[in-house]
Length: 584
Ligand SMILES: *[C@@H]1O[C@H](CO)[C@@H](O)[C@H](O)[C@H]1NC(C)=O
Ligand SMILES: *[C@@H]1O[C@H](CO)[C@@H](O)[C@H](O)[C@H]1NC(C)=O
Ligand SMILES: *[C@@H]1O[C@H](CO)[C@@H](O)[C@H](O)[C@H]1NC(C)=O
Ligand SMILES: *[C@@H]1O[C@H](CO)[C@@H](O)[C@H](O)[C@H]1NC(C)=O
Ligand SMILES: *[C@@H]1O[C@H](CO)[C@@H](O)[C@H](O)[C@H]1NC(C)=O
Ligand SMILES: *[C@@H]1O[C@H](CO)[C@@H](O)[C@H](O)[C@H]1NC(C)=O
Ligand SMILES: *[C@@H]1O[C@H](CO)[C@@H](O)[C@H](O)[C@H]1NC(C)=O
Ligand SMILES: *[C@@H]1O[C@H](CO)[C@@H](O)[C@H](O)[C@H]1NC(C)=O
Ligand SMILES: *[C@@H]1O[C@H](CO)[C@@H](O)[C@H](O)[C@H]1NC(C)=O
Image 1 (tube, rainbow, N blue to C red):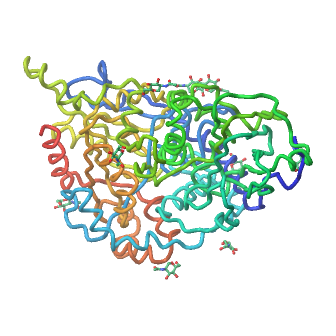
Image 2 (spheres, rainbow, N blue to C red; image 1 turned 90 degrees about the vertical axis):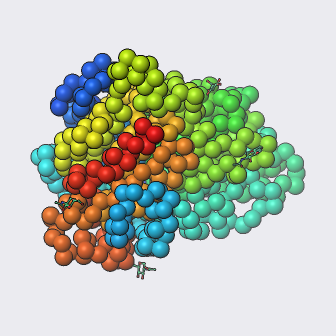
Image 3 (cartoon, rainbow, N blue to C red; image 1 turned 90 degrees about the horizontal axis):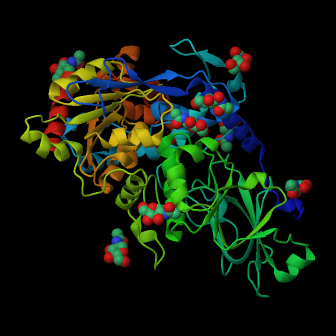
């Protein structure tokens, strides 16, 4: 390989700190939050998460695994969205997000659209991006605290969680110009113009050099290439500003330069295009798994119909395992751990470095290049369902699907509601009461305590068997990919003007995927902040004033600190509304 020091991706001090931090988190979180789904608690699940009145509790118990392998499985991001986050490798949970605008007009009846409108003005503070400060105080790593269960929790995981939240608060339109300064080459192989991602797309003589230096050479055949000698540092994921995504050096050389610099020769030649992307970052939080990697990978690579090879940097074994069905369909070729392939020079007819991304957990069909199929989020959900062998689009929601036959024998089942609880924050502290309220309203309830290392294949079938997926704003809701068309996502929006993120991260995608989107915004009294700080505290009385003081404070109170004590009396009409929708 060409040992040109200028090619090695530079890593600033903060970056390396962040990386160390992330690795540290992985270890800690993997250990502390490896959760297991235990079936039991209120009652046992009968048969196929059965019939009748059972409240099935899929509960998690901390795993006792300490091995490196197992710890890696849990990702850093996971910590934030407790439930989802906490689920390690083959975990089940999904997402993270939300808002409420202190007006608490009976929000329960509003559709997501209305709420979105309502919140446009009220949530500006959410968008007040104070300058990103990635500096991490290493001292925090030393300060452990003890959580309620008596487990020692390193505050580093909080930091990690903060980073995820910060990224999430950074709603679309990040205008950070960091990587757009490089001049504008005339025929660019690299496009640095998008606020979310950088991407280089090279056809011809492209050589991916394995090993720690992460370099892709592009040798332009023609003598007059405008970019010869250019070098780019590409963060090869869909978050170009995330410091702990290491960069890949992309260097363009003329044939003469390549010769003069003794550019490394191919050690292997491949007939298919390659996509180089990073698997670290905020992954392990299921929302980020999809928003940052899987959907961008779908956007970038689905058009190859499997005829593409993935060259992965910062490969994550848990990710490979958890999402193997998706990865194996997007590429029918072996996944290459590029960092480990020291000495290899892989030549592909086309190499794409980086992942295109349209928006948070979203796809904009208008942005596919001409001649490509313009996929939608609905296509994506159906694609995921197909890969997981779930019933096709023609099959109705479970309640309707079974009702014809069941009604005939007067065995009509109740609609099934999956109630996902979170692990660390935004928990339902009165979970049994909520489950009982759902039962009383006429649902069969499946309670999921996201702590278990459950196979996604298995869990996806449970989600598919439900008519309603209910949870507090958070990554657990990412399981909505496994719902059937017309099923309901019932999002409980925590206190603190969290409506906008709730809509943006879950409500909008749900609607795009033809799910029914229902939000229930809690009142201050339903937040544990109320009991903790009293009704006169600004965080309780005036969330706007909190948000005005910068994102950190809002994050602290509303994302990290509060839990939820649903007022089941107030919530009951929402349950009945959902029930009517399902029975429609
Ligand atoms: C990576 O780059 C550094 C500095 O550019 C160089 O010294 C080192 O030999 C390279 N490592 C490999 C494996 O090529
Ligand atoms: C990880 O967990 C699995 C079970 O989930 C266990 O068999 C294994 O010993 C653990 N360690 C490693 C390194 O996988
Ligand atoms: C980031 O925060 C640290 C400590 O809070 C501060 O010293 C530093 O100046 C900040 N950096 C930026 C770029 O705001
Ligand atoms: C924090 O926890 C880690 C891991 O359990 C431990 O190694 C470290 O000594 C603890 N630090 C403090 C200050 O307790
Ligand atoms: C991917 O899935 C689609 C169906 O969704 C199937 O037609 C295609 O053959 C699969 N490709 C691979 C490489 O498995
Ligand atoms: C997708 O492409 C088809 C045909 O090319 C077109 O009719 C349709 O309007 C496009 N949809 C979107 C959302 O761009
Ligand atoms: C979890 O993933 C590991 C590999 O990472 C696998 O060996 C194990 O069987 C999986 N466990 C479950 C419960 O899916
Ligand atoms: C954004 O936050 C900063 C610092 O918290 C504050 O000085 C500024 O006034 C805020 N801007 C808006 C529009 O709220
Ligand atoms: C619960 O909600 C009902 C109906 O909105 C209300 O009358 C009641 O005061 C609430 N209970 C509490 C404890 O806030």
